[in-house]
Image (cartoon, rainbow, N blue to C red; front, side, top):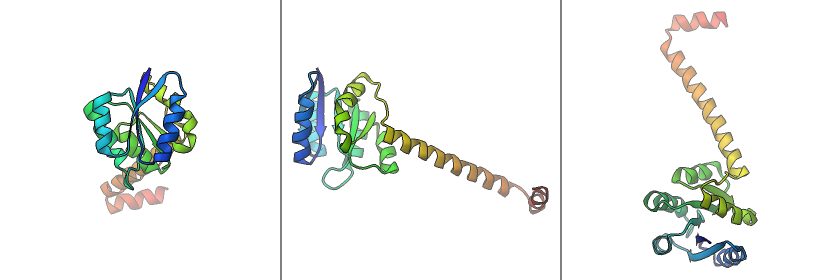
Length: 167
């Protein structure tokens, strides 16, 4: 049986997700927490196999910091569960140590995401992978721009003038 802790501050989502995950024969939600403090207590008490983490807790992205703390201090496997799809949020979640990132509208993917995280082989969701590819492309362009600027800065005005004539 895979034990999970759900960190979510919306009581309707808590009821729905607990019920949905309880219908899976190999999954058990051992605790639900709505604050970082409750999440820490639940994690220490139950030592779950996987934590499902909402990013927004009490109107702030506390789930990101909580993920960093739980993964670093307790070695927890965390699957982010959120409605946020901004690239920076996705990167922040993975930098914090999340093993996967699921959008709430795709909740039907959660059982398999929990199983994959438990096995340590969680594939990154298509949305998160695309955001990462886009960010890598942006970083590569930025790197080329910086390299070009460094090259321009290292040349004398005469060398730049010669290059312009050749080009």
